[in-house]
Picture 1 (tube, rainbow, N blue to C red):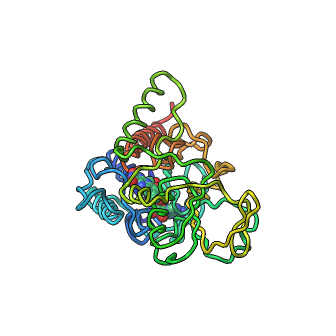
Picture 2: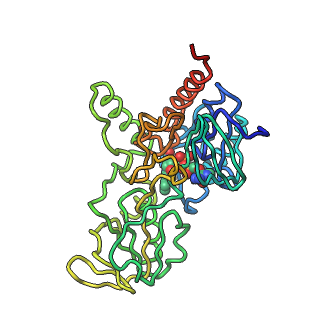
Length: 358
Ligand code: FAD
């Protein structure tokens, strides 16, 4: 450990994005550090629900340098991903310090000053790779605070057990909602609530083909100079549990209620209905509140970027937050491109800073 806590680069976040970036960065400097607030390796995968699996096979879900070992059965479980990330850290001897919570970041005299629960760290360049998981998004509906049933976000969901025999609404049109609906509907009476009709992939298409098709569309857009296509990775993958739910005829979505009551919801035609629990599978926002003192965090929680480089703060990069920080960058296989490019740019920046001025 650098006794003075002065580094060329600090990466905040020791999940897959931080590790992939460190993999490339270690070619350029050994004076770098990863700070992560979790007690164990694995990033957000530690907080997934018990039955969570990847939607693509191990060989299509790997970080740079080392393929994820093949799953024992079908697609890798979240515990297999955690084991892979744990071993990845060790294999490349990546300097992760945990648990360290970065609370705020300031910038003085060409140095970032990180205030953490373990004291202060200083660094010439800063890479944020804090993901989205710790900042779940809850949409607001009138009366939400009155509802006395159970409300939880998919970030807190672990298993269907607590919903046995209950009437449950699952809100959201993505993969999380479809997978949680699939298992909760086996033990509870469920309704699926989405803003629009959900999009399902054909049965034979798994996450690997989805990624390849989205990459091809992205590359085509790059070549003809048009804007990269939005989304593309949000469509529901027909994993076995979701196919099975379709066979049970529970994969039907209806449009949202207009308000909540103490014991239920009111549908758009004014009909009230008693509901025991609502599971909000409504996504996440970037976990970047600690950057607020720099004045770069926009109203939507993002930071203006060119690629992964912050447009308004020299020396700052952001990796792995999804489309706005690089195509497919919030996936295991997709983060490599952003990670490699970021490490190269950080190195260039450090070299320029070190070069004598004439
Ligand atoms: P994280 O894994 O969240 O890591 C960030 C780390 O930074 C965490 O340890 C966090 O605690 C820490 N941190 C945050 N704030 C601070 C702070 N202030 N100070 C210090 N540390 C901090 N991707 C795929 O490729 N295949 C899939 O099949 C797939 N399935 C998914 C299923 C679900 C339900 C979800 C939600 C996502 C899925 N993803 C999948 C997407 C993706 O792989 C994850 O979102 C991934 O965890 C993002 O990695 P990350 O390293 O960017 O962020």
